Each structure stands twice: as C-alpha cells, then as structure tokens.
Image (cartoon, rainbow, N blue to C red; front, top):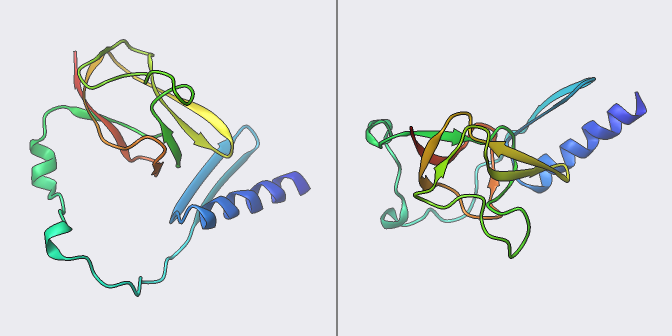
Length: 142
C-alpha cells in the first residue's frame, strides 16, 4: 500500500512539474488517472499572426493517418543522444518496427508501428513533452 501511495505521489509530481493537465499510468496491480485544472494564464495574448489553429476540416484533408503516443511523457526520435533517429520522413516502416521512444517515469517506452506504413511527417520535436493520444507521426498505410 505504501509503495502505491508513493507511486501516486510521484505521478502527481510529474503532472505538476511538466505542466500536464492529465496523466495516466497502469501496470499489473495499479491503474491511476490524474488530472489537474490549470489557471488561466495572465501573460499577454500572442499576436494573431503567430496563432495558427488547425481546423478539423483541414486535419481531415491531410493525407494518411497518424501514430499516436500511447502515454504522456517525453518524445525521443533516437535510441540515445547522438544516435540516428529510428525513422525519417519518407521511410517505409514494417509492422512492429520501433518508430520512437516516449519516456515516462524514467521508463523508456518504445512506440511501434501497428502496420506497415510510410512516414509522411514527424509531428513533434525531439525531447518535446507529449500527451497520451497525441499524434507523433503522420503516416500512409502500405
């Protein structure tokens, strides 16, 4: 019980420190979902020229589908600093091939392609914090 409580406290710390609004964690004997409301920012609004919302219609028109992050964490394109990325735009990927790593709770979690596909676009930057379900790659099924 004490270990589970410490795990929840650790997850809450990650939620707060990373500025996340939601975090999910599951293993064989614990399933936790944490969420936090964020106060409205008091910072000055960005100029309209820098704001580029993507409409659902524009997203639907984009070719292909996506590979999402399975959990919240830090996205890494390569297995280690200085190593070549797992995949590049234009690469053909086999079913089950690792395309990136998402680090959560100091655990490196490989994200693998569920089907053979071609990587059309990498949607996030290396070392960027991602949310569960966030698209990481735009892909085209083969």
